[in-house]
Length: 269
Image 1 (cartoon, rainbow, N blue to C red):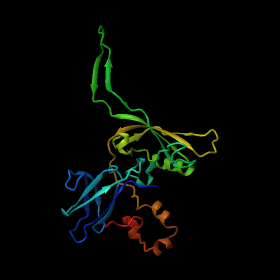
Image 2: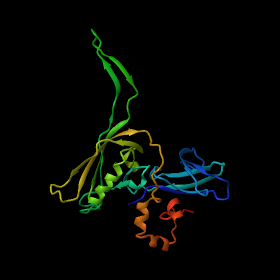
Image 3: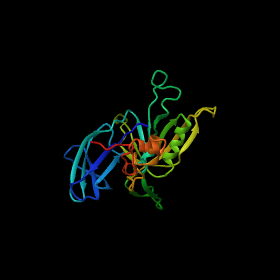
């Protein structure tokens, strides 16, 4: 799967006795800064994956240890690759990218791309009101509050059985997902709560693996919680890179490398 994230290597060795670090993100090397996470440090080091960085936009990071040790890293630019991304920031290994198919004259074969983006459905901005009839009055009493944010539908196609299984992995946790699209879509990065996930057969011959998906969603506040592993420090990534334990050790890997995420994703400069 292509990747759309920023990988930070945090190393405060010899600079203090830091056990945690606050990570801030900004659009310049001097800020303004927005706090995005606080992470534990192991031996004053950590590998951090930011899967919510804006696409196609240079960003910088300010990393501050609990003894005021500070590091500025950047710029980093995450390439959208002209794809739409549905991510689970708490389960980054499950995130998926969806490409466009331009038809018979475009780069679209019988099973390429495997993840095919069909589009965003119409948005609804629902009211938050109560209308109460009043005896002998033409008009009801109108009790209203701030209008709700958008809800809509995500539509996409998978073109293999393993791809359909990966969509199950993406949605099965049940919580909010993070949706990003290239700037040309005019879509603002948002956390959405998926509702009913609808999967249907795209071909009358149900032996053909193509599936079409329609997923209603509602925009919600960002999720808060610990990440379930990282893109690099999880057993799926390790097993994909090394078929056996002997292969891992032959490549110089250790259990420490598995724990800190550097086995599959080596530390940056």
